[in-house]
Image 1 (cartoon, one colour):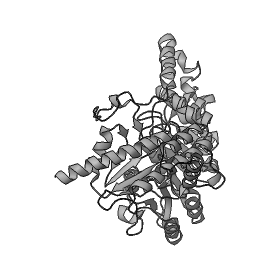
Image 2: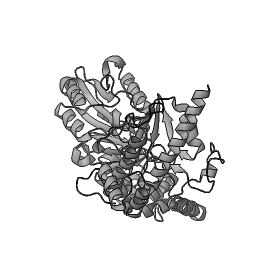
Image 3: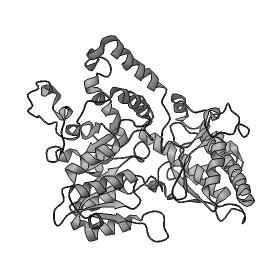
Length: 468
């Protein structure tokens, strides 16, 4: 499966088809790609939903014993099988020894987050001391902005992309309100060009160059939740810092999806959730990054007991000895049950490695794109058939797992027909269906089956539309 040097996914698909002497859309191509996939065994580390257990399923349209086509890891990852074991270990320890569990075992409760933080270093490209696991994403974003956003009369803006995830938007609005700033003047929003769905890097850099002297903080998504666009984080960071701005990223849709090198890129701060590509379960333990260059200069605006050095924390003398860097931002003790589920997933990432996962992801999503374009693009589709448009960038460096699809017909019926047939994806306003084949537990044959189901769903949706 490993592509030749500089081989694009479409070229790989065509090469494999040529070797098999079949058409690139033949099922044998998917089976061969799976056969040669060195990561295929990682699927066994996860629970995969059965179609019969999905609430919207129509059992007359599926084989009830088959696995669902789960393409929603961009919203909620699947559970690693070891989560149950790790939860039981801690509940058992609690039952047997009570408070002694704070200091005993594989994950002593006082330092539970620290026992697994090393597993995050490869995923975000940072040193252990630059990473902290705590809270939820938006709580962490607020804590970081309280420290990094220090507006002055001349430098008072926060720069972000249009249609940022609502929580980011609200967080920025409330931070501006906290400083009694005019939101309209202080919230600088960059839109894509007229008629375009995604952002051009040169347009972002131009705004930074022209307005950077008035911008205090640049806060972008790493990967945009709706379009699936992966922003050029190193370029945005370099341009922003050259103008004296702090640069941070919400990595909710980037972490565990694309390769990150936060330390080497010089990113000032970042935060992420862990229940999407990191598979820690709904509301799982989030994370934050503060570059080591700020360890002794940028301090948390709000502090708590767990930001105090462990060696003197229990002296209880109320004389704060703040841990330098990211760990100083901790306020409370780590939630051990959330640590367990994240631990189970991060161990899998350690075995698989981000580099290998990204390599497979490029081909997996590229294969999906190839089949979508072959069957459903404007050029290929029959004139009366619904057209599927991919708004996610086609350049592999500008996207992760996810493709966002729009349709020439209303998506409500299409989405319902996909659900009935055991496809787990989601729709997002205004008119997108997001599909994300995840390299840890999705296969090339999943992609092949999805295309077949999509064709059936489109036909059914078209019939419904015609009967209205």
